[in-house]
Amino acid sequence: MRLLALTLLATGCYTARSAAPDINTAWRGRARVDLEARIGPATQQAEQPDGNLALRWVGHGVNIKSLPSGHLDLKITPTSFAIDAAAKPGEAEKYEYTRALAIVAPNGTLLDVDAAVAAGFPPGFNAHTGLVMGLTAGMGGIIEAGTPLPSVGVYIGGMVHPRLALIGTYSLVNGEDAQLGYVMGHAWGLGVQYWVRPRLTVRGGPAAILHFDPGLENPTFSSGATGGVGFAIVRSGSFVLDVRADAVVSTATLFGMAGIGVNVN
Image (cartoon, rainbow, N blue to C red; front, side):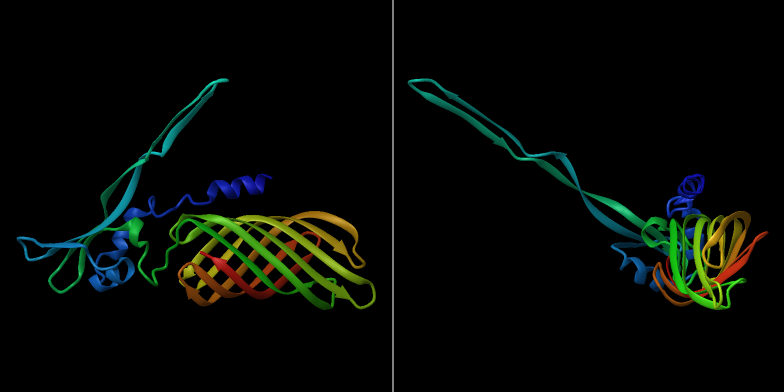
């Protein structure tokens, strides 16, 4: 429960709004066409005295001021009846707001940008915001077992820095000893994940470990650490497909897995 609570507290600490200064800075010096490819053509533009262009992107919304309402009153007596009914339509108003602003040089270079929430970080930029999570499936091995078996790992957390996330992890690793039977290891960890490069991540941290000897006997709790490395082979928006290897080490055992992961980051 503590692991879950800490992970949830971390989730979303570094969102588009809190990351706005970093996002705006990342867009400066890039091409106008890159920004318009992300959020669409500018709605308005005006030439400035210095020859630069001021761009504005406009959004539209609807404000519901009141919902539809009405009443129905029916009175019946032995000799008559009366109906009082009325309906009142709801009231809504459309409004306009600024989605983004930018100053562009004559050569199309972005000089100043205020578009964080609309645009997010530029394409290919090594930074992330908000929630991160992933699932890995592959083959696992345990030091006491000679045969690897299917295993899984999951993580969830939130960004606390453009390239650093606080995450909670869980691993279930299986193996088999030809003589004594199945071996199993569970690991619950709390750690960090860091993006060394846009496609390369490393992670690690302390862990609580439950380990079963061959034959799924003698369950033993121990403390230890988890670590891993992943390389994204597919990146599309916030979706990532990667190859990953993870390891768990404690005073009682050593196990790990390698496989394919699907992630949101």
